[in-house]
Each structure stands twice: as structure tokens, then as C-alpha cells.
Amino acid sequence: MTRRGPTGWLSTRLVQWAATWPGARRAALAFGAGALAGLGHAPLYLWPLTLLGLAALIRLVAEPKAPAGWLGLLGGAGYGAIVLSWIVEPFLIEPETHGWMAPFALIFMALGLGAFWAVAARLARTLPLRSPAYGFALTLTFVEFLRGHILTGFPWGMPGHVWISTPIAQFGAYIGPTGLTLGLLLAAAALSRLDWRPALAAAVALAAAWTHGAWTLSQPLPDGPGATVRLVQPNAEQALKWDPELARRFLDRLLDATAAPPDGTTPPDLVIWPETALPYLFEYHPELAPMIAEAAQGATVALGVQRAEEGRYWNSLAVIEPDGTVSQTYDKHHLVPFGEYMPLGDLAYEWFGLSAFAAQHGAGYTAGTGPKLLDFGPVMGRALPLICYEAVFPQDVNAAPERPDWLLQITNDAWFGTLSGPFQHADQARMRAIEQGLPLIRVANTGVTAVYDALGREVAALPFGTQGHLDTALPAALGPTWFSRFGTWPVLVLLAGLALALLRRAPR
Image 1: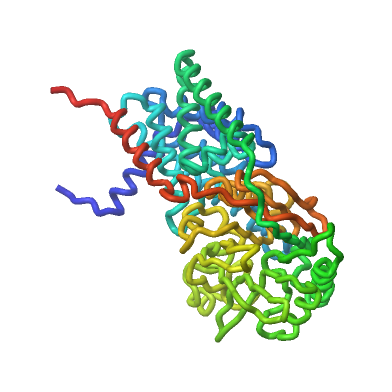
Image 2: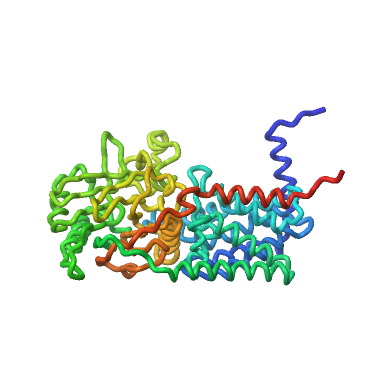
């Protein structure tokens, strides 16, 4: 007998899988169903189409003898092609250098997401489940949870995020995005059966969730702490942001907005600039901190900087006191692979000259030590800083050493274009406010710059893509939520219980 090595076994399995190609018609249906499901995210918010698209894909996967792996891959790729279409934007900042990579980036990201859905579909048909439709809802929920954790995680655009534009999002305070995804997929699985009884049950459940969410939104919030915050949006075009000849112009925009008279009768207690607002390395220009403090006229300033130490560089947030001293810093710890660091680190830079896409110095940024709170005094309280990408990870917010009084996100969403990326990013940050029951201050270079209350509602905002500033009150916090205490564990236990309930009993 001839033994086959692991390479031969894998080759055989790939050939067998390729032989199950569903054909052009079913492939197009699966891809189209996934693409339809993607339309529920920002900026369109067509969540009923997400429900229909997922129901169609689930029905395709649940058909007897369906090539589930292919259908899951194609459905996930169609979903990713819509939801992650913004991924081409960073490559168009310098199209003459990076533009050729844009289509490959989108294809890679869409197929990568599709691979998770392929695993979910295959599991749903391989496991001895009484209903492949409901089984696919459970396995897809689980792999979407894994997508947010494996290889540092990428939970962007989870299906459950489509509820952010509806009152159903308020259940995020109990079950988080994984639970919202489970509810959406179970409803889609019920619709996929084309039977009025499960469809009616799904409609009643969604209506009840909507009603409870609407009731939650109708309840009054406590009064805020009485602090005034100034949000500064410089609107520095990404293609010009790091031009040395324009650096002073962009700095003057920030200083002028900081020194502007109060919008109301109360001067700001805190002024916030966006991520990497300073077009200079902070340590190399000691004159900047006193200059910024002078413009702030007695207010504290929190701003995004790039800082350096012994050949290492950090994407950081610095706090400048009224006397011009830097009292606190926070270094971003959850970095973007390839965007802010290279997986091979210094070796990739030294051997191949490869550096992270967004890094302005060296091979890339160094990760900080982890979440920490910034103390802004007795009135403003303590904030949990989130720099850009960190706001899409619910587990990072739950990992804070203590419960903060509010959330602070600074970001430069000019990388993401003007169509969908900045708005999806802002939605996911809003979900963190709902999950934690905490207000969120979000300051972006070009937008979305806004204030959200502890229920995730926008209470003040600057127009997108404009230069300006906004003075607004810091909203009140609510008490700790179920999700802030227990995270996703209750939903994972529920998933396991539902999966066990779906298992077919072996005959005696």
C-alpha cells in the first residue's frame, strides 16, 4: 500500500472540492445574495435587503447535496466585495505608486472573508444537524466571532452591525455584535424555509426587539457632568497631509480652531485633535507643546501624535496641560497588519525594504502595552482612548483596566475615502458606546467627527469633509451593562446549547 503524505492528501482534497463547483447559475446566485446582504451597512442602511440576501444564501446552502463550501465562499465574497469596497481607497492616495494594488486588495479581502463563510457552510452540512438552515446560522455566527479574534482579528462589517440604524441595536448592551449577528441569522434562516409559521415567529421576535429598543431610547438619560469639549476637524487631505511644505498650513488650521472664541457662553474644558494631527515628530519639536497650550487658553488638549524613542515609533495620543507640559500619553496597541506594522517586523524592512503602509518613519509602528485610562480631572473624569482601528474591537474595550467615564476615539479616516469606510467605522464605534453604556467622543481628520450619548445616538456632529470645530457638552454615562461585565461568553454558551439541540440523535 502506498502512503500519501500531507501534501498529496491536501491536493486530493482540493481536486475533490473543485469538482463540486456549483455551476455559473448557482455561483452567481450565491455571490449576488451575499452582495445583497452587504447593502444593510452604511451608507445605505438597507437592512431588510440584508435579511433577504442572507435568507437566499442560507436556502442555497441548505439544499440537499448542495456544494456548501463553494456557496459559502461565493456568498461571503459577494458580501465582502460590498462591505469592504473602501479597502481600495488607501491605494488611491498615491495612485501612480500603489494604484495597481487596489483591485488585488479588494479581491484578497473579499475572498478572505468568504473563506470564513465557506468553513461555516461546510460545517453546517457536515455536522449531523436536523436543520442545515439553522445550523448554518449558528456556524456562521461562530466563524464571524472567530474572524474578530484570529490573527489579531478583523471584525469589520459583522452582519449584526446592520442593526445600528435601528432600535434593535440597543440589545448590543446585552449580547454585543455576536449576539446581534446570531439574531439576524436565525431570522434569515426562518425566512429561508418559505413557511409562514417560522417566518411569522421571526417577524414577531424582530418586532418585540424593535419595541424594546424603542422603549429604551425613549427613557431619559441622567444629566452630564457639566464639562464642555471642543472637537477640531482640520480636514487635511491625505495626499497632502505629510507634504513638508504644507505642514505649517495644517498646523495653523489646528491652532486657529483651538484659539477660536467659545461657541457658547462656556469655554471648553478639553480640546481634542484627531489621530496623527501633528505633521511633525513630537519629540523633535519641543516648541510645539507650549504653542498648543497658548492657543488653548487654559484648556487641556488631547491630540494624536507620532512619537519616537531609540529608533522606535508609536502612534500615540498625548495630553498637553494648560502650562504646556505633557502629562499623559497613550500608545496605540492594536495595530493594523501591513497598514501600521509588518508581520515580519524589522526583518521585512531590513531584508526586503518592506514597510507598513501608513507609517511615516521606519518599518512601522511599535505596539503599545495595552489599554489604559487617561485622567482629565474631577469634572471630565477618566476616558478610555481608542486610536482609529481599535474602536472596532469590543474585546479591547472590555479589557480596560477599570471602567471609564467615557470613550475617546481619535482617527484619520481620510484613508478610507468618502463613500462607505468612514461611516462604517463610525457605526462600529457607536456600537461600543451602546455595549458599554458610555458616551463616545469621536474626532476625525475629515470626519465623521461627532458626539454620541450612552445609547449610541448622535447628539452633535461636524459636517463631513469640512474644516471647523464644535463645542459641545459631554453626555452622561449609564451604569455597567451586561455586555461590559460578561462580554461574549453568554452568547457563545447559547450558541453551543442551540447546536446541541439541533444534533440528530443516533439510532439505537
